[in-house]
Length: 157
Image (cartoon, rainbow, N blue to C red; front, top):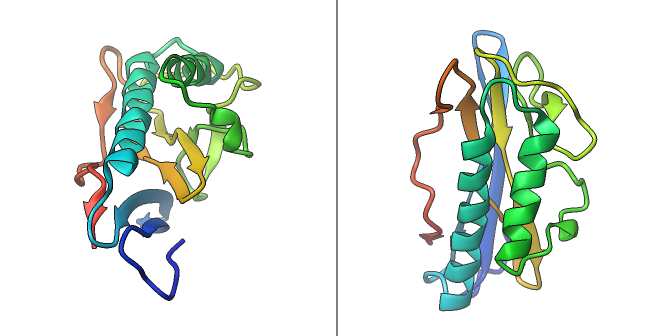
């Protein structure tokens, strides 16, 4: 969420919904007024590493819970606590509603199947804002495929 009184160093995170032919999805990105500090860039890059680990686990036959476990374990190895993300859901399905099952959480044992579209959105909440990267992934018979194509780097406003 963006503060109405912007100051240099303020993190601006936006999560918006998209629709096409009756299907809905959501997507998020972040920027920093005046450009990110080293601390902000480091945290953003760690969230990116968590997402990439989740992407590697987004294989047909794996469960949503297995992806969540990989993301949480990666965060812990990087010194991050994903428990700050109170929803305890680090991604979700996509379809007619903005968010649909499965939930990328430790409690969802849904098996991924080819053709399924899921969102990975690991994140942490810091004293200066929300650091979350959300990407749309297509589950295939082999490697997962990125559906979202916009730049992921922490931008500058």
